[in-house]
Amino acid sequence: MDFVWWEKITNASHFLNLIVEGVQEGCSIMLQLPSSVPWYFTMSDILSDRIKSQNSNRALERIQDAEIDPGEYLFQNYCKREKRAQYRPGIGYAKFLAESDEIALNNYILWITVDSEEQTKNWYTFIQNYDKLLGKDRRGCIFIIETRAEMAVRDQGRIRAIVYQKEIEYYDQYLFHMLAAASLKESAIFKQYLAEIVTLMISDDVELSAECIKRGQTFLENPVKTIQEIKKSELRSDGNEFVFAMSEKKIQERIWEAQIKIIFPVIEKKRNSLINRYRKEIEGLLPITGAYGEEVYELEEVEIGILSHLVTLGKLQVSSEDAKVISKLRNARNILAHIKTLSQKEIDEIFAL
Image (cartoon, rainbow, N blue to C red; front, side, top):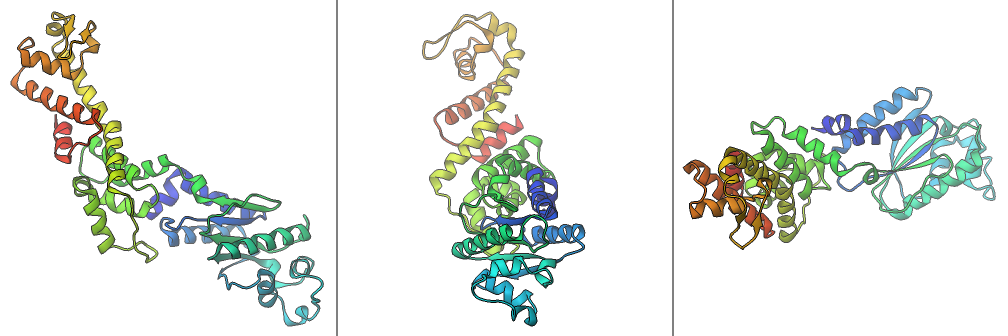
């Protein structure tokens, strides 16, 4: 599913394109990623291949930040000894490197992974100064500073801030979940409900949500237990453990929200079908007084509760099978109306009607 996410989902693919296009235009990139970026190694491989193919006159090198002054690090590692001998402390590393034409640094794209927020700020500050001193026409190094630090970074000069969370939306995840559920041998409405509930419950870890989608019915019957089993038996693609810390109360709220979005319209469609089936009989009973004294004058206003009331009183004759359907729909609607959730068994029964 890694390539489905990074190549088929519009904003995920666009996210990669922003990075590649920025580098192609000679911009340095401040790349902010979440702690649970999906399929990190697939993402980095795709980016590396695209950047290399479009920048054949530069070498792409990936580095783990050494937690030392950025200018000093570049000076020590990308300048020859004889060039370093020309440096004087009063010049400053940014100015010296920006004004040096014949140094290896100018032929690199350096993708640097930085752990701390403080060091990310150090790199950002260095690149700002380096970019200003480099000017528009001089060739210099292009940087990709990758960080998981949550900090405010903005575009400036030839620096572009690209933030994963700002590019990926709710519907990107929902679409991915629908694609992931496509291979399940279930009904279309089941897949839609599964995708909705997974998207609402797991909005910050696409790898975990993909595992939940894979388990289909098992997940829907007991989401919390299923996630706990995944955490015990599986690891993320980067080798780290899955994390899920949503409270039981919040989980129930998300399940209810999914049921309102998906199950409630199913109940309404079934209600309309029943009204059309017994249209003449119901029209003959109008106006109708409901169980709580409400008056109904229009056929389309006859709710499932009123249908159930008419059947119970014997005023509306329906088949025994339809009587069971009306009872199930009424009970389901009442449960949702009182902000409670249906069991998966009840949902399966509604889907089967």
